[in-house]
Image 1 (cartoon, one colour):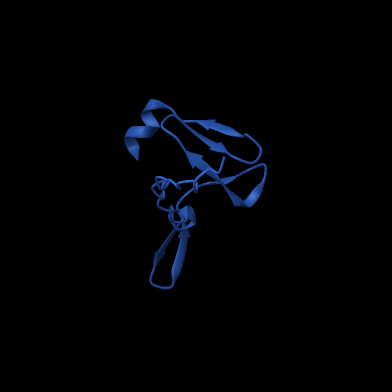
Image 2 (tube, one colour):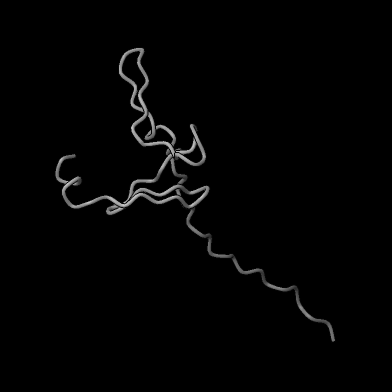
Length: 77
C-alpha cells in the first residue's frame, strides 16, 4: 500500500509586535548644552536609580522605596 506524498499546509504568520523605544530619554531634559534630570533619584540607592512617577506615589524599582504624594502637592505641579 503506497501512500501519496503528504500535502503541506501553509502556516498563518503571527503579526510582529512593534519594538518600544527606550524610555531612558524621558528621564533627562536637554536644553542647549545643559542636561537636567526630570525625575527624582532614590535616596537609598543613590544617583543613577530614579523613582517611577505614579498617580499617588513615587517608587524605586530596585529597592522598593516609596514616597506618597499629598493632594495639595499634586495641584502645585
